[in-house]
Length: 579
Image (tube, rainbow, N blue to C red):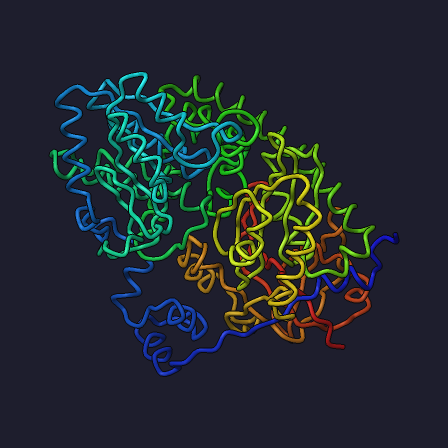
C-alpha cells in the first residue's frame, strides 16, 4: 500500500466557488439609500431578509422585548401548573438533561432558577457509556427509588414514548422540554414542550434545548410575578448552548445570543467566568470563541468522565469553587485533546496507506482501542479532510459502536436506514448519527454502506463548496464598513460571517509561513491600501505568490488583536492563481 500522492492530496483541497445570486436588486438600492451604507452591505442585509429601516434596526439592535410569549408554546400552561403543584406540595423534583453542552447548560439553568423557590430539587445526567443518550430506565428507577415524583427532562425525551410509559407505571411524572423532531407518537408526559411538534403554534421553531428551558423559566416568572430582570442572568448559558449546538442564529435565537454574548463579556456566571479565565481569553468573546474555547471544555466532562461535573461547575456559588471545578474539567479537556489528536493521526494514516479507502466515496475506519468519547470529533475531522460521508468505529460493551458525519446536502440518516439490517441500533439526523452493530457484521456493513452511498451521492457533493456572498473591491473596506459589518454578528448558522471575493490581487512584499502550513501576507488590489491576511492550511501557495503571481481570493473580514493592538485582518478561505 502506498501513501497518498500529492495529486490525490490536492484533490481533497479543491473547493467549488459558488457566488450567491440576489433576486431583488431594486430592494438593495432602496435599503442602501435609507441606511446610507455601502451597496455590498445593503446586499448582505437583503440576503438576510432585511428590507427596510425598521427591519434593519431590529436586526442591528436585538431587543429582549421581541422575545415571544412563552405561553404560545403547546403545553406550557400544563407544565407551569405541574411545577407550581410540586412546589406547593413539597414534592421532590429531578432536573434531567443530556450529557452534552446543550443538556448541561439546560440543567444548570432550570435547576439554578427553581432552587431559589424550592429546596426539594436535584439534577441528574445519564452516563454516556452506561446509559446512553436521552431518558434512561436507570434514571427513572433512580427517581422512583428516591421518591422524586416529577422529572423535568431537558434537551431529550421527545421520542421516549416507552420510557415515559415506564415512568408513569412507577408514579413518576414528566415534563419534556426538547427541540428535536418528534416521532409519530408524542410521549404521554404531563407536558411536552417542543416547538417542532406539528400541533405547536409557537412562532419560532429553532430554539436550543437550553432555549426551551429558558422559555419554561420565563413562563414561570411571568405567571408568578418574578421580574424579568431576575432571569436575564441566565442568558449567558442560553448563548453557550446556541453556539455549541449549532442551531440557526436567526429570529429569537439571535436576540438570545446577542444578549447572551453581552452578558458573557460583562457579567458571566461564576462557572463560565472560571472557564474564561482558564482558557486565557479575557474578553471580546464571539460565537466562534465559545464554540472552540468554552464548548469543548464543558463537553469534555461527559466525554472523558461524568457530565455531572459540568453542571456542578455551571451552578457554582463562589468563584473559588468554580475555578477549582473548572481546572478539573480543563484537565479532562486536555486528556480529550490527546485522545482526539492521537486517534485522528491513526485514522489519517490508516486512510493514507489504503488505496481502497482512498478510492471510495465513503470512509469507515475501526480500531477497538479508540476512545468512544471522542470518535465523533474524529469523524468530523476526517470529513473535513476528505469530504465524504465518514464513520469512525470502536469497541463498546462487546459490540462495535460508532459516530457518523456527512457532507452538505447528503442524507446520512437515510443511508444508514438502508443498512439497518446489519445494525443493532442507530439514531441521529441528516448530518450526524450514532450506530451500533455486532462485530461479525463490520465487513458486510463497510461494503454495504459504500454501495448505498456511491449509488446515490452526486459527484459534486463530494467537493466542498465556498459560498461567496459578494464581490468586493479592497478599496471598499474601511473602518466604517467594518464597524457596520461587525454589527451583523453574532455569526452562526443562517447568519454566517460574509465571505467576500476580490479578484486579481497580489502580495505586498513577501508572504511567509506561520507554523507548518499557514500563510501570512499583506495583499493589495490595484492601488488599494494593503491588508494583513492569514490563510490557514494554504502554505503551499507561498512560492507562487512570492514570485509575483496575481490571484483571486475568498475571505472573511475580522479584527485581529495582538498585544492590545487592534487591526483589520482578512481570513483567507481559498486562493485561485490567475497569472
